[in-house]
Image (cartoon, rainbow, N blue to C red; front, top):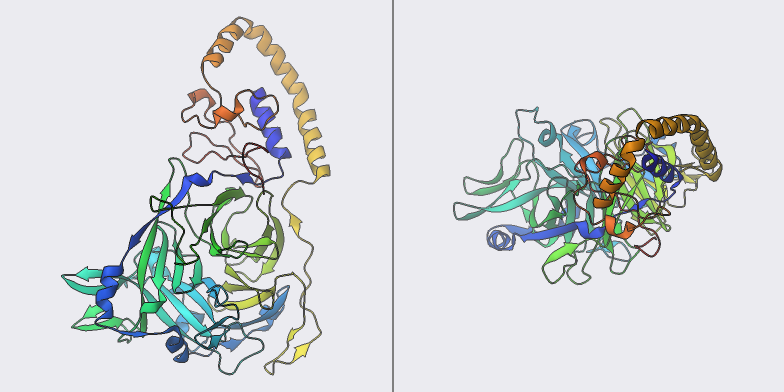
Length: 524
C-alpha cells in the first residue's frame, strides 16, 4: 500500500511527458516496383503539373464562421457543385500537406506554386453499412491552395490511390480496402499516408496514370480498359511500411506530418487515443537521397524517439515555432482544440479554437501558416492560422481587401499540467486526507500481521518488484525495467489516474511507460 501511495504522489508531482523506448517502434518495407513497371508499359503517365492544370472544381471563398476562428489568416471551402466534397458523408477529408513539405523552398512544383493536397477517407470502408463498396482513399490536388487572397485560377481535382497487383498474369490495380488514414505527407516524389492497421503506405508521383472514368465505373482493368471509377487519375502504391513493434507495444498510426526540426527532415507520427488514454508520438528519420525512411543494415526503419503525453483524440501534428502543434477533435458538435507541446513536457491547450470537425494540420513556413482541414458535412473548411498565434488582418470580402478588424480573441492557453501551487495544494490535500486512515490501517496491520511480516519480507527478497527507477531510495531500479514477468499480486500498480497523469497498467497488454531520470535516458 505504501508503494502505491508513493507512486501515486510521484505521478501527481510529475510535469514531464514520458520518454518511451524508441527501439520498440520500427517499420519493415515491402515493394510494388515490378507491377508498376508493367503498368508503365500500358498506361499513360502524367505529371503533377498535368493534374493541376486539369483542375475542374473551383473552391468557394471562406465563410464568416471561418473568419471568426482565432488566429485566422485565410481559407476556402469546397465546391458545392460536387456534393461528395461539401455535403456528402461518403468521403471525409482527413490529411493535409503542401508543396513546402515536398521539399521545394519556394513552394513551386513544376511551375505551380502554393500547391496544397488533401486526403479523403471513404467512410464506407469504415462503417460497412453501405451496399456499395468503398473506394479507399483519394487525394485532392489544389492549385493555388495556399495563396493569399482569392486567386481566380484556384482550382482542384481528385486522384484515386490504388494498390497494384498481378491479375492472372496481367498488371492491374484496385482501390484500397478497409484503410482508415489520418495523416498525409508529400515528400519529393512520394505521398505518405498512415494506415492505422498496417503502418504506412507510400505512393509514387512519378507514376500518375491517366485512365478512363465515369459515374459508377469500376476500378482497375475491365474489358481491356483501365478505370478509376469517377476519377481521371490513379496513383499506384509503391511501398508499404508494416509496423514492427516489440511485444506488449501498441501503436496505431493516425496523424502525421513532416518535421523540419532536423536535417534531413523526419516524419512524426501519432495515434488518436481514446478518452483518458494519453497519446504516443513517434519520429522516424528520412533518407535525404531516397526520401524514404532511413534503414539500418538489416533493412529495418527504427524510430529516432518516442514520447507519450497528455493528449487524446489527436487528429493532426506538425512542427513550427519551436513547438509541436497538435489538433484534437472531441466530436461533431464540439469545437476542436489546439495544443502546443515540446517533448519532455505536458502539452498546453488552446480550447475551442477550431470549428467542429478539425482534422490534420500542416505548417507552411512562408507566411508562418498552420493549415488545417475540417470534415463536418455542410461545414467543411480548409484554412490557415497564424503560427505565432496572433490575430492578424485578413481579407474581409470577395474583393480580397484587407481589414483591421481582428477575429475573435481567445483566452490564454490552458496549461495541461499542475502549477507549483496546485501541486502543493493537491499534495497537502492528499496527505491530510489519507494521514489518519493510513495511521489506523498501519496500526491494525501491525497487530494482525505481526507474525507474517518476516515471511512477506523473505518472499519479496526472492522476487523482483516493479517500481519507477527515478523514485528516490529505490534499489536496483535500473534493473527492474528489463523484467518481463511480474508476480500476479504486483501486476496492477495503479487502476485509475487523472487525464493528465500517466497510467501504469502492467499486465494489461500495454507497453510500460518509461520515464527515465537524467543519466539513465534522455530528456529533451
